[in-house]
Amino acid sequence: MTSKGDLILGIETSCDDTSLALVNEAGQVIAEKTVNQFEIHADYGGVFPELASRAHVHALQPTLREVLEAGGIEGPDLRAIGVTRGPGLIGSLLAGVNFAAGLAAGWNVPIYGVNHLRGHLRSVDLEEKRLEYPALVLLVSGGHSFLAFLKDQQTIELLGSTRDDSVGESYDKVARMMDLGFPGGPAVDKLAKTGTPQVRFPRPLKNEGFEFSFSGLKSAVARHLEQNPDADHADVCAAFVEAVIDVLMTKSRRALQAYPVNSFAIVGGVAASPQIREQAGKLAEAEGATLCLPPLKWAADNGAMIALAAWDYVNNGWEPTLETQTRIPISQI
Image: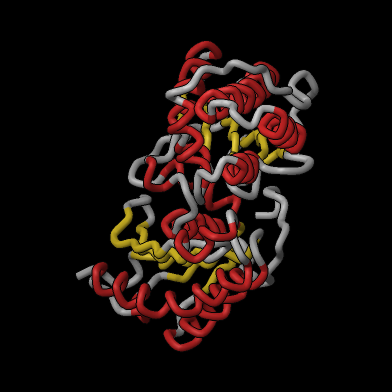
């Protein structure tokens, strides 16, 4: 039986995954369950917001029961509850925040609204401590793409973010063009391994600062497929992935040279890409930084990263808030 006050319950509902987890202060995941909505959104080629929020409402209560039972703890014995308050889809966020607020009131435990982006940053330290400051973090997910310099746990400097589509969003849209299913990232990466980049797609903003832009790349793929309806999809995927990695690694190299760090971390769902992991390893070695990657299980949205981030709020005495926001900069705790 877990001792009173040893665990925080993390609740993540920012998009289309309902995920709850119990995590101790050291980052050990005691219990976790994630309910995905792939089948619900497959016909749309992307997340249908209203259906996502409804699915969260149905999944939260049974998922909570399973996690508490697996963790051997009662709600009132929790140290706190951490719940994603943004950024994300407003309906999905409200489903999680309202559920968490009700639990906190009923169990009389503290509740912390967690910045989803901070959750991804903390995913690197789940199961074992990996990140050493100062650090450079590349976040690549379905809704976000940015580079940030972390002087320490509390000092975060955003170097550059995407001006339009995120990396993950571009993956999904390219996958939809070729009917590869949803989510598109794993399908595109898998097909890319069997292809050859026969065409060179553009690398938007590759040689400019730390900002990203992937809309033009996505549009170039669409035009190529329209003009070449018989194009081999594996080759198209290989060329697309090559362009994405070229941009990500070029900008990461520029940042690593401008901001000497101990660690180079890549987080977010796209951090599960085997191609990105391979190239990131080569870059980190060349620049003298230690590559820090979350275990594959914790790369995508999950309640465990929210719980570990909530420990930061508790231990640093940060003022809790439950104000939900669809957009929150990483610098705003």
